[in-house]
Image (cartoon, rainbow, N blue to C red; front, side):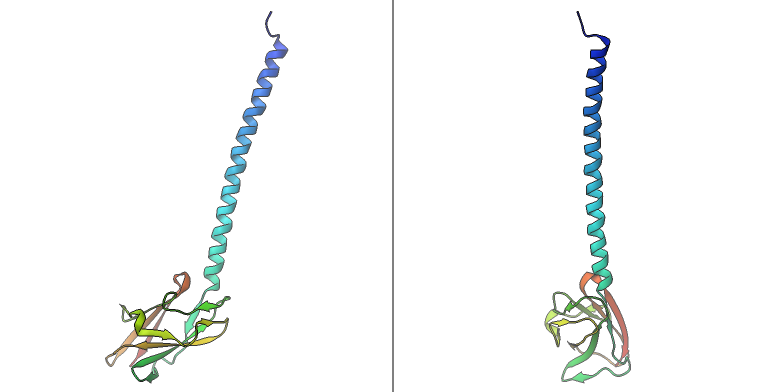
Length: 146
């Protein structure tokens, strides 16, 4: 008195359905993880592409007011840029300018807007390079003469 051949087939069939369900569940979870990861990465890339600025001074004539050199930054990206000493870093000739040595005329720049960057530093005569590093590590180099 044992299981008939049909009973054994039913048990193997049920076991196969359970295993197939577990495997498909794992595949669905992995697919959802990959989809979420790609979506997040796409959002970061979009934000980085929308974050852009340019330095629009005349490289031969840099205004000087008191001890502050004046540079103009234009937002050429697709989103408003917050301009603080925490979101932007300033380098001149490869040397980091301390956050107390520069400030912006506005706290943010709308799309296609311009703000003023005031940098308090001493420069010798000759060629120099200003590097401004902004949000999303977007940076611009600006060679100029004093």
